[in-house]
Image (cartoon, rainbow, N blue to C red; front, side, top):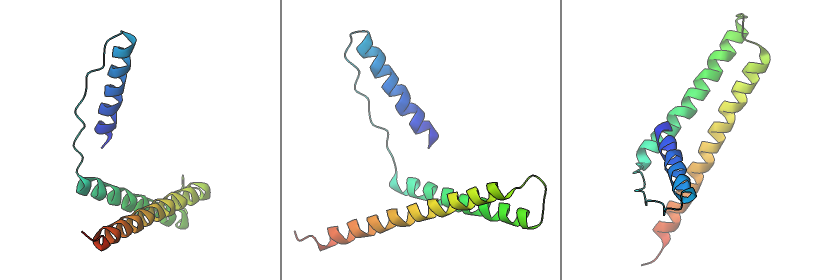
Length: 105
């Protein structure tokens, strides 16, 4: 996932360098993105954030050193926000699917 962002950034830098040199930028092939892979990766990231926040909460409750309340609260808020964002994206996808299914041909 991160390499796609780096490849895109490199492509933009090359295009900017070509423009600065007075050359027409080379057209680049768009990277292929598999929707299922992106969706799976996103769900795994949300799950990981929730597991991390739960683990930090347990550590704080047990009184382990190095875990303070501020870090626990920030972690819980990040997990909550990522979950809410995922739910909203799912709602948009379901809405779009229903709209497409109701479209008459």
